Length: 482
View 1: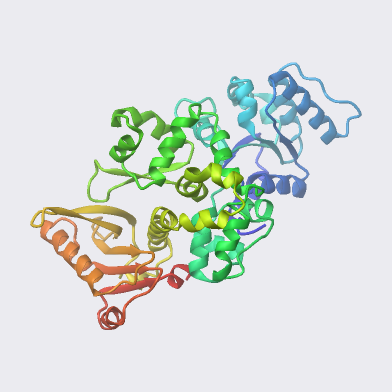
View 2 (view 1 turned 180 degrees about the vertical axis):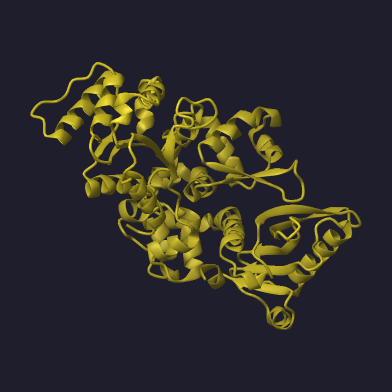
């Protein structure tokens, strides 16, 4: 098991809690993150019960879980249940005498076949109920359908307030992903991360441990894995949408994702790409957000301005690079020519925006305190108006601090470039934007550091300036992995 110490500790503490009474836990996360591995290992280590639901009718699921419980108990014949009330009580009885985890994996499949199941579990865990009070079962419901799992404990849902554990298993961040893939070169690590993200299964099961041997092997690696019709990664982005039950009009959702991957990050740009009104996008954007496929990122300077980012890099890669040439990729024997022609889209639509996200994440969570004179409390991007020049300036990174009076001064503003050597011209642009913020007298930007992030490098005169001016900070690709 790689990394997952926090998740394993939380599951272990929950499963072995000796307090009387059955308790409920919910485990969620996008597919391929290792949830099943964790829960199976937990049951093996503690003698717990594990059941993986399938897409089946309610009656077939009752027979399957009856057979699984009988096998766990060593019964010579399957147990027969007429209802889920009996099943839940049988699961609670497994915990009589000592705490034991009782896992139902892919719970959304069961709830889709029987929508009353959450209410049945709620009633089974009601206070002063003998079956609950005499049990120490640690019932764990797990699922990958993010929209469903997100509603399970929210609002007026039946299980609201019943859970003693709510665990989200996240993807690996860019630093952990580089360690997991075993990629030492920082630029190559960023490129790999921009395609497959931090999903562990993509290395082990999907790419069969095929890892770029170095910078010169990156393009051949892309051709033999993601762009190869014989590789599971080739169609994975399509399957990710099919796994979400709330995405019924898949053509619409693919078009929305294609708009975002194409650089149309705000609502107006997406609407223009689809040929629809902005008001028509409220529902599909909300559904994609609930499914965990996109993130809504507010402008740090304008509350009414929002941009959208795709959470899964493989989905971005599919829509920006693969979808426009899908038929050719399926039938051609010369994918190298197609990949070469797609380099502009790969750099502009994928590497650039992905590096901006990584730089914001690094600034928020990994930047040393002395670098920005304080630890940032919030990091985002924003747009600054320039009335004198009748234009506006985009800031890729804006880091806010938090002083003793709960005010939020700006600690740093930054610009991110993937394939461009940054020089004094970029620094002068940041200084101009800083002056505009200072003139507005409400951001506390007078002492903000000016940060240049580049995966390509910096000119000598900019390096000389940073060496003598503490207000200028240079962050290269290698720094993002420290």
